[in-house]
Length: 499
Image (cartoon, rainbow, N blue to C red; front, side, top):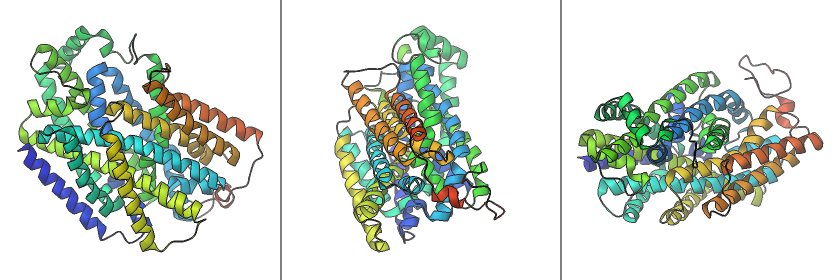
């Protein structure tokens, strides 16, 4: 029954992708869906993409290992959704409407009048997207491995094959509609699993008592020893509250809403639905208790905690729906990242830098985007056959790359008229280099800092951005000079930001 429901659900996803292909007439519809979506569609796309396979599979596994401390990621990410809407949503939507920006590097070149800023941020987005995509693929492989009962590599191949048709055909339209459907299923599924699992373990008090007996640190917001201490707590604040603004697969969805007035409702819906799906992480605690009681075999790897628990203790119909929704979440998030990665190569590097802004025929540009998307799928598939880390840590590292490379130049730059081109170049370059370099050193155990590597890289990029801006000459900019139209149709001051 689980397999049947999963297959039927995936067929629905494929139909959505093939149907959406008919509406892919140009790059605007491929990357932004034509800016025609309402608050519910945009909100559920944002919450779904924020959760993704990294959240459901990876963070559930980390909760199994470390307890409640990992829930701070969910609390901070929920706050981060509000912060992103508050700072970026209106100005990004206005800029795309006035200047036609389709990608984050589009906006940043416009803000700093610099091809170098476009190139560096495009490469940073590509690098982070490949890392995050590896986390999605590993989550997809682990899920199908459990459902199909096959080897991880075969499960990964099957999942990626379906994903390829879905992504290359549908573009952003299929991603948004899939997010909408699967997020509704995941919200109800998370509530069912949370309530059902709580009854199995005997209630919250009994759960906390048994978890505390295993390790008292597991019921704390941060641990007294080990890798999830106070510095990890501080790092999560930097990466998930402040850093949510630097996630291109999330904030690029601000481009897609039909009316700016709808953003306030989208914000509330996105944060609420994300918080509800985070209840799924209790599966990590339930599994730990069941394993200690001897009622469940310990999973071979933390990445298998969620699928094994749901398969073992829930009715096949419920398990099948939850598995299907999670697979859809993984696929829609994968699509968002693949579109972000392909746009970085096609639009931001090839067309705007190599071709020096030469306008390509729409059909040629759309075809090239699809071929590049195929190439990125193939590359990330090969890398995911033997990934270097657990899903949770891979996703966390990729968030760190985006945070350090994009947050200062995007969030501060869009608010602060004094920010300069030179500062943007150095900030994004240093953020990209340090986030990747420090993570590699950490994985190789050559240098394991107390703070998360992404948080350290963010501090370096922010300090360099502000410091260099103050010591370099201020420059005029088309965004701040022209201003943007307000709701009443009048320009308001000399800045673009009217939050």
